[in-house]
Structure formats: C-alpha cells, structure tokens
Length: 449
Image (tube, rainbow, N blue to C red; front, top):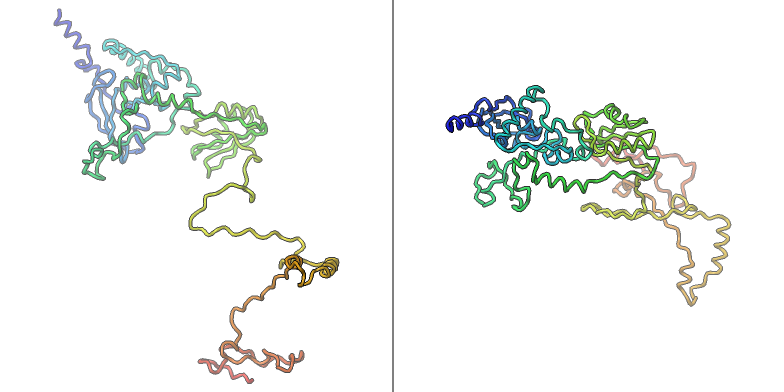
C-alpha cells in the first residue's frame, strides 16, 4: 500500500504530471519589460524552467528590450501572473506599475494565497477553471474583485514606462579593476550601491506575496512628502492649468473630462507649451475639478499635471528699480551707464532755454558775484554758471581737393580783398579729380584758373 501511495503522490505532483505543465504562445509583460523597440525577436523554450511560485514547469521566453539593455526572461507562469495581475518578469502590477504590497494596501485587498504544495495545487486548479470561463482577459482571485482605486493609488501610479530598470548588471571584473573588454563589455562599468541599502537585496517571492518588499517601503516613505494643492485666496480665480499634454490629447478630450464638475467657460490649448487652461464659470466648479483631478488625471494613457492658474495681477513683471541680482555672463562688456535725467526746460541739445525773466534775474545775480579779490574764491567759483557745451560740426568724409595736392576749383575761396559779390556768376565747369589732365586717362579739357 505504501508503494501505491507513493505512486499516487508522484502522479499528482507538478514534476511528473505533464498535463499540469503550462504552454503559452506569448508572455504577459508590462511595457517597461517589453522595451521601446516595436520589433522584438523572442526565444521560446517549452517547459525549460520551473515557476518561482508554484514550482511548475512552464514555457519561458527570452528577449532583449532594446539597444544597450540586458536580456530578460519570464520568471513565473501565466496562471500565477494572472492571479496577482502582475508582469511575468518584474512582478509589478500591470495596471498601476506599482509593487503588489502597495497596491493591496491602498486597494484594501486581502488575498491570502496558500503556500503549501497541496493547497497551492488545488487553488491553482480552481483558478484555471475560472480563467477558462473568463477567457484569460481579466485578473483572477481577489484582485479581480477589488474595489475601485483610491485617490492615493491613482497619484502613485506610473503611466509611463521606466526603461532604466532594463539596464545591464554591474561588471564585477571592472569593480576589481580587471575588466579588459572596454567598450565591448555588455555589463555596466559603475560602482555598486551600498551593500547595506535595502534595495540591494530583493526577493521575487516577497514581492509576489506582498511582504517585506523594500521598493514598497520606499514608496510608503514618499507618501508623507507628497505635495498638496494650495487653493488661492482670490475668489475670482476659476482657471486650472493642465500640463503634460501631447498631440494625442485634444481640446474635446479635456471638455469631456471636466464637464462633470460644472459649466466650462473656455478651454485654451497651447500646443507649443504642451499645456492648456480650463476656465469655469463658477469658483465651486473649479475647486471640485481641482480636488477631483489633482495627481490622478489620466487621459488616453497620459498622466497630466493639474494646478491652479495665477491671476493677472500676481504675475511679476520686471522693473528698472528691481534689486534682484543676476549672475553676470562672462565675456560680455559691462553694462552702459544710465542716461542723465532730462531737463524739461532744455532743448534737444541739452541747452536750457532762457526766458526774459530768467535773463533779468541772471543780470541781477551777476551784480552780486564777488570779484576775484574776494577772500573766499570757492564761493565765487560755485556761483558762476558753467558755459554751455560746444557742439563740434561733423568731420567730412573726404578732405577737400586742395588738401590732396590739387589746385582748388575757381570760386571755392573768396578773394583776399573781401567776400565775393552776391551777383557773381557760377564757375563754367565742375571740377572732379578725374578731370585733372595730369591724371592718366583724363579726357576733359583743362579748366582755366
């Protein structure tokens, strides 16, 4: 009877019962593990390894997510992955991108999975029957019956892939100074983290069951330091700033989401800045939209940033009298000196206009000016007004002809006897340097003196 008992036990185990082995055509992966390359070549190997959870042989897949990344492979079977709704490789939640411990605690999921061999096999068979009914398109177990996500879970969720997780491992030979591959080494040439860091030691079983996960502990510590949305005191502000827009999010998408909070006055989308401004007709509707969308607004798979708009009077404008010190840029000339204050009674040349009354006052003050023999010469120098600035005429671009070694043209200079008469006839010809007969190529006749 002992022999038949051992045979019955051996046939019920996953090792010898090939009917329980799992075969699949494509793995269940998250976007991070799948990589950014749309063309991936995977290596499929039937029943090559045992599942890290149920210890059942299953079909594994191996692939490279992209250039400069390490090769990845599936670690658990598809039944265990669907039981927790996690990726077969990283064991993070497929919907929120968070560890199982964080998701279960915020969603209040109490999933006590069996851990003994017999109970795990019985529980797995029941789950597989349930998945066959649903078509393996929805999560099974307690995760499939979970309540709607909380606001905090939506704030912590990761909507964009984190490809840094696919980096190669650290080269141990480079750490010891013995790596001779150089740039051809497929591993990272970086120093490892502190061995005492909790993130340095992670266990797949703990992550799957949601206990003692160092990544989850780090996220819980960041929850206390999450920023809160400050409501402006100005009641006239009814505009919300929506950031992180891309070409896939349109104005109609924003209207479809925010119309549930109240009447929308306008929606202005700025494509160059990838942002939008949603203005409500009432302040209560804007407050409800800010509270219901802050940190958890996801449209077409894009997590958007929600903030209150600033009133026009609160926008700072630069002024000349501002005392803000800016960092000087090297290589630039110094700043120009400010112009002197303008005198409203001066003309365009800076000369002060003098009226008749000012001239009489000046004559009266000139009589009171002390002479040079005064005992205090400083008072006399201070009382005398400085002369107006002298304006020099602009210099000519070319010197006159007589300064270039040529005779001046007739009529240019008046005779020494006096000024030329006003009725004098103009000269017969116009003198140009090219008309000089002494110059080569001149054709004009010589002008008489």
